[in-house]
Image (cartoon, rainbow, N blue to C red; front, side, top):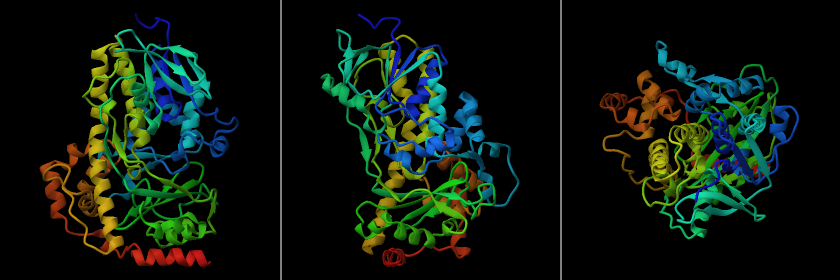
Length: 484
């Protein structure tokens, strides 16, 4: 017994990953039904609606995002109209080479751009476009409670909603984000699932949004990171992410188990820390910026590569996780939106090329997900672990323990970053990896790249006198902010 031929594809979750998958499927002639727990976004002008859009089911939407070069490349190839719409609504493309060491421009540098945009604006524009497609229908306020299976219990044929409605489906896409609800659905159906690969990020982030008093004027300070200003320092991180329409976010990251930094929750404490941070301080000048929000706090989830996104235990055909439902990586590196877009369009292409539902189709989809996510998951695990150990050692006043490289001979990210400040080739390699255009192995495991990194002994930040506050100075500033 199979699902009726007329059954649509069901996408569970109407955020970035789900919307992009629905778009990609509909463009290939597939009828799509999107089931979303939350209410529709506000009507009205896009920039204002994005500002008013509350996303209780997507807590990270209130924090800073950036669309990396990978995400821009995906949009240019599959949804150029969405990129153009974002630019028309006030987003801007950032030329990352403006932060490169001096040297001639290369042809591949045209790829080194990032889109400065609030997540809510990009998502709103995508939602409105998908909502208007004739082959897509939306059900808001709907939660999926379980799966429908064929008699052999090896193929998904639909879903069951919280109201008891049975919705037949050609196949089901799990775009429920970090909840990865398909694992619960499978377990509840008595289908064993494999073990996820996980590693904690040990990261807590505080974010506040601002608006420039003169949105079209010069920026308050240089974007030393190309798409951002600031740095990931030896005991905390402080970074500015420009967005659309003169808005920007300042984000400060600290260890989760560090109650001494709790005062970052307050406006005074947050501002005091930001004003101490290299490259970030100019963006706090009250004469040129206005706060739009209070300080928002979030404890970041662990790095996770789901069992449904890598070869292993067979689960069920016609069920496909996408985006964060397949893999979550350390948000400090801003890969989530871009990887979700890449996976959504690639998955739709695979299902179009291999339409017959069954084990072979599912195996292809799993191999695709693993190829997309595993390099970034492994790098994120390494970087999260190294950062957490370093930050913990600074808090405890002990030497940081060594962290083994991801691959034998691969330079550490901190070592690469120091070399990139004075070597244009290392800078390009690093940025292409950070922006998702090349995997870490493709760049960092090159013998020639490693030699250039090891041959560069200059720390340009230290040479230029750029020094973040010590931990004692940072904590003192928080205490001063409390008294102000």
